[in-house]
Length: 470
Image (cartoon, rainbow, N blue to C red; front, top):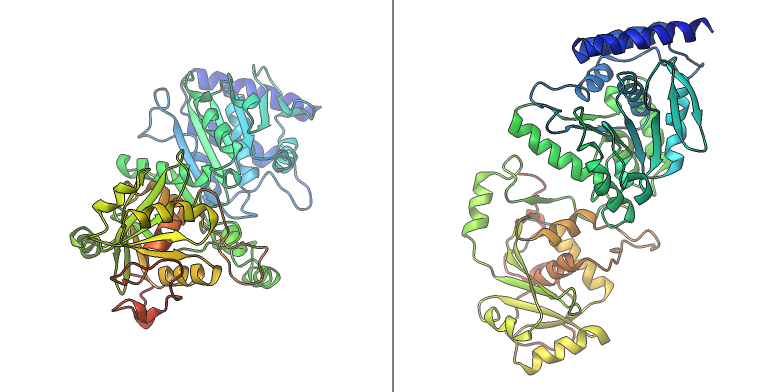
């Protein structure tokens, strides 16, 4: 009872100071001082203790001198490893914003992810109660809003407004799921506010809402000359020992991406990424000038075609193959087979055949005299193409090849197969075109299956010359 009275009085004072224009970081320091003294704790969970970097990351999410959050959101992205205390920290931030009479919406991919957040909320002396039916967190004091928790659904984001949008575990919000649509519809929740804050915290995964936010916000931070993203790994957490990490690696031998994602902050594909050696040609940080110059001055030599229906259209992926690099320069959509005649004399084309769906298009192309390799897939041949790609550094023009770039990001191994097998998806048009593109030149029209490709079939290919980094 005594603590409730003290917390009530402090909450009122905090709001009054906020209304009198005391700086938000000064208010946050006062609030954290209160938590250090009165925060609740259990034998394993303590709301009173924080590292220096944990405090700095929380402050980064609240204020930045380069961002006027009355006009545009202050958006921060926190790539944090497991057991780094991200749920604890952002429960603390959410309550703080609520005490300033700001409306906070906490959204996650799945309801089960909110259980730990509720645990930390209940250790906060400013939290009165949690309604598990409505997922409303009620605070002490005269706060006009409850802190609202919910999953990413149309009902929880459409027509909803708030001052602070908190996105928990966006690494599970993959861009091909309905969750992603709800996430995109959730972002405008802060638009009417004069305290626009968007906070992302998650472990990383490619092709997710979290990665999208990371890339966009990182780019904005570079333009503004400030920091809006932060990476924290197990090395930042003295309570995670090297021995524990080694134990986790041993216990997850069948899941090689597990430790990379959960403890090292590496952007992974669930199931294991097939490709990790690809870069955007416009990425000036990671692609040297000499490679960029070679990319732009090299003419296209190869093209691969992935057949699709009239709605999606066929894909032609063009570029060139080198001993050390694979340059993917352009992806083109078409419906009429005559389109390929513009390219067949300048580049070596490969078209898919030998299955009922592909044959209808391959036969049309052959009757029109399209000069190409007509190649029928089997998994051994496809994985050889994957190997040839992985023996090179892949440079992609992301602007001209958005589908191909996306496909390289999301390509995963099929976990149901004993041997390494590319997982089949219905939207891999750019990747399938690239796999056909990396073919040996024949100089003749070949119909039906060609022999399996080996490293020697393209002049200059030498796996021993493989370059793993620039």
